[in-house]
Length: 324
Ligand SMILES: NC(=O)c1ccc[n+]([C@@H]2O[C@H](COP(=O)([O-])OP(=O)(O)OC[C@H]3O[C@@H](n4cnc5c(N)ncnc54)[C@H](O)[C@@H]3O)[C@@H](O)[C@H]2O)c1
Image (cartoon, rainbow, N blue to C red; front, side, top):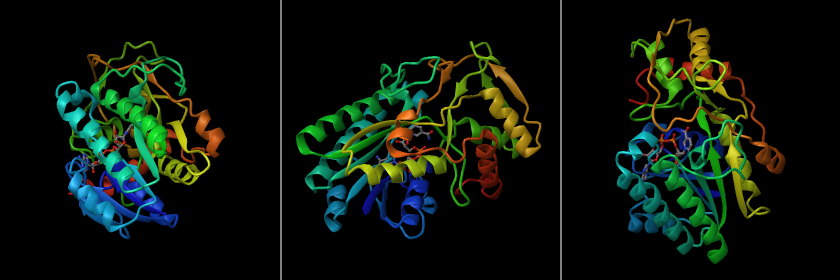
């Protein structure tokens, strides 16, 4: 298929673009580079520098080629920042996605794959299923819920086939691509920055949560497992025109377990200090991903935390300054 990948110069989009190329699809990356890197775009993909808020630029891209699908990764992703600058997030994630969906429908693109998030759920201490109540704790999560709801109506009114994938924490790296957010707020790269000597210590935000070791528990899914689910979902859209799945490992690891894994993988002591809890942090966020396993036959190939951290460590050692 011919696929337009928005946000394909970012962490997840670039790895999915690479996997799409490896499975025989044609890829055009559409990214403004506001947070991404030209060097992350895989060889073999065409690249258009453009903003999803720019309808004229989208029209030009969609007129130039006839696409079989849009895969939409472009967004701002910092939940914390979204609580300080809500307008920035509603504009980029909601208005941007709406502009893109409208343009895709106007140009007859039949399939749409959307990066949603575990941030749409109300927090819960046991694994989350797709039927659990929604209740975003941040504007970021709210923007994802709004676009899921938009897609529901575009399916009904315009027949757009879509899948929304609610990612838990994407993690790990492949040889040439890894996590390089600006600013970085994700635990694994931050811990590895300590091992690289770029940061003195790692903060554990709260160690009095009702979890076995007191620190927060999250579900980390290897970026390659995330990518393989996209390829499967894309190919399943003809038989299943409307899909919504959790995408996670199904296993939770605590902040302290991640730090211990990083110590084991890097051999660095990685000093840690306990800091106060951050508002809005749930004690645990773990996926029940049985629906995508059952429907699409997907299963994670790299579920082990140590393997995930080791893959990230290899990338951070060879790219100590990320893509710069
Ligand atoms: N990283 C995670 O763990 C995680 C978890 C849940 C959901 N997600 C979602 O996955 C998607 C990708 O996340 P990521 O971690 O790769 O983030 P990222 O910041 O690395 O990538 C996002 C990309 O989108 C581009 N972009 C942003 N706004 C744009 C715009 N208006 N026009 C064009 N390009 C624009 C950026 O330049 C960047 O290359 C996002 O939609 C995010 O909300 C990520």
